[in-house]
Image 1: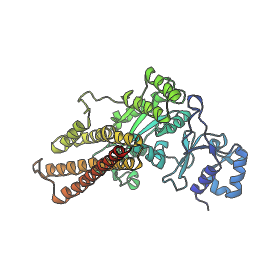
Image 2: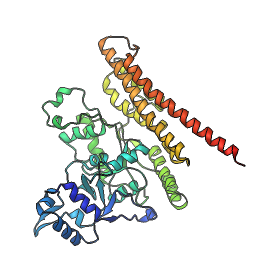
Image 3: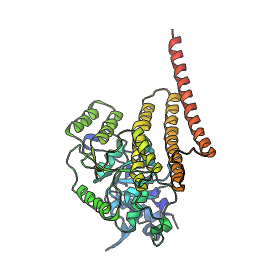
Image 4: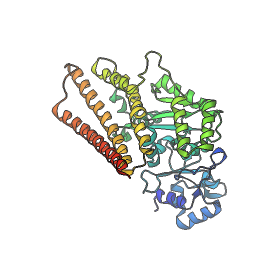
Length: 418
């Protein structure tokens, strides 16, 4: 019996690269995307020759129709396909064809988040996923360096899928573990701490560079608001991206005059600037910089404040860490010509992310434990945790010294030139 992933790899190997159209025709499509063989009849014949009908049906590549088994409609109609790989050297675990998955019933956004391609882009743009409403917009964003997933299913989440939605995005929905005991989701819930991820609903058409949004956007928005109002799903880090006319004009000019990096930065800057939160929180002003966000989040654990606030506060802390510290370093590395200096800057960004995150967790967890035990909020860290913190700080300082030495050597070489 052939594994489904082997069948998916068979289809990928017989695919052809996607071609972008409209304003993006000079760009290369992201390599994770492809189109099936030009002839669906040829692909179906090749699949039947190489695999049993039972295997094809189990992999959902074949479906039963009125005239008998045939190729899945999304494979037969030449839809744009995204190969969902957990690791670059592994066969696909699924195929995202058009706006739905071929092999599983999970929400497409969750499958995309689990892909190595999405993780790679998020290392540069931060833990955010853009939600699109057409396959053309999906391909356009991926091909300009922004990870995206279809909105399919987000307007109909219910039951235990609500818990899966929160778990996958790292959202803190409920503080009472006993709630899970009678829930079948508890048996499959991941024990790994999820990386908090922001969703950005795309309220325009990147493929056409048009301000006109898709009608499904409002349906998704209204459904998510119902989940918040009635099931307590936090939506603090879900936003809607709507560029201005000036922003669209800048994108067009960058396409015409600049490089792909210029276009990426134009899109990234617009996504940072031209977005509005799905849910505003007028009751308290959100921290506007990383230092303020860190102080606020830690204060929640040092006081008798409701720990439920720690979920959105932690999400914002991570978002500002990426915006103000990590992403500037990554962009600096991309713009650095010297390979050694570029590697050092990228390593510094990764250690910075780990150091800031781990130090915040160590401090807040210990402060929370002391508070619950009735001890002083400013109690010192235990020696083993303090030593663990020093190891990370030492790695950070060592990289900084190496980077400074690298730049001094470069300056010396320049001065010695005749």
